[in-house]
Image 1 (cartoon, rainbow, N blue to C red):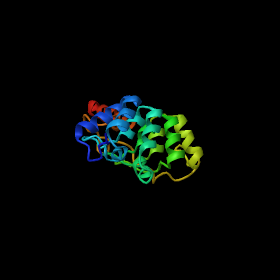
Image 2 (image 1 turned 90 degrees about the horizontal axis):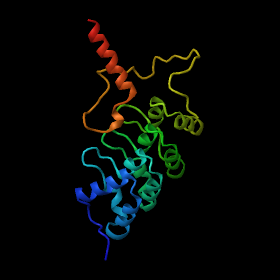
Image 3 (image 1 turned 60 degrees about the horizontal axis):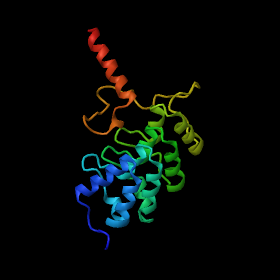
Image 4 (image 1 turned 135 degrees about the vertical axis):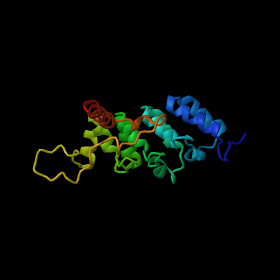
Length: 201
C-alpha cells in the first residue's frame, strides 16, 4: 500500500497537529510510516493560527516528537520549516523559548540552525520571549551562544531612548481565543496600569 502524497485535508492536518501537541510519538510514527508521506508534513498547519506540528510539539516540550518530526522532513525543506512563522509571526523557537523548553531550544539552534532573531508581529524575537517570560536558563543559553546583551537592564550610561516603547493598551494586541503566547506579563501589566488609571479618575 502506497502512502498518501497529495494535499492533506483539514481533518488529517488537525489529527497530526493534535498528536504533536499531545506528544503522541507512537501515533505520529504510525501515520507517517503507514498512511501519509512525510513530505506532506511541511504543508500541515492549523487552520486558525497557521501553527505547524513543530510549533505545537516545541511549545509543549515534547523533545522526542520534535526530533522525530525534524528527522522525517525532506532535508532541503527542514531549515525553512524550522523557521516557519505562524499567523502571529512566531516560530517554533519563539514558543519553546516562551515556555522555557531549553532542550528543544538547543536542538533547534544547534542542529537545525533555527534563527533566534526572527521577530514576530509584536516585534519580539525568541530571545526577548525568554527574557520577558522569566525563562532564565533559556535566556542565559542565548546570551552565551549568540553573545547578546540583555534588554535595557544595564546600569551603565548607555542611551536607552531607542529601546522598545513600554506596553500599553494601545500597542499590545490580544486576540481572544487565539494562541496563549499573546497574553504576556507585559500585556497584563499594561492592562492593570490602565485599569488603575481609570479607577483613580
